[in-house]
Length: 186
Image (cartoon, rainbow, N blue to C red; front, top):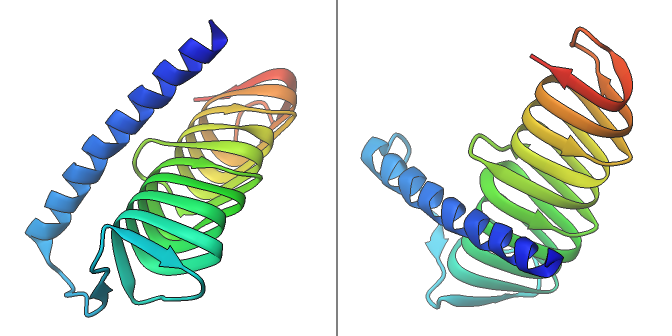
């Protein structure tokens, strides 16, 4: 039953993320404030062995053992993955890192994102974000500004609009700075 529920949640999250990615891509195409001079990956599958910071990947990027690029829309798999923008599923065993902004699902031991302005999910041992909108589930969850839900052993936020569930819950800018088990900010 738990596996079925987890599968349904993952499918719903991936469907929602793809819709958000399409909306963001069309909104970005309408604005065209800055023209990007980078190179698009010529194949829907990109094998990354190193830092290729001027590549945009639309499709699947496989990091063996490390990969870095400008933009990934789709799926990012491997051991260590870093990109500036990411929309989709980032599944790297050791580290997922989005340096600027993105949306989607990050699954790995250590997940970080600069700004998650769209609904995002982080699942891992250590999750962190500068600005977060969504769900963080892990042993340690950290965000500067957040909206959503944090579930873990230790949850910390500077400012948070939502709920925290865990042994240690800290919202430094909230009415209740620290509460065990459940904390909330509104």
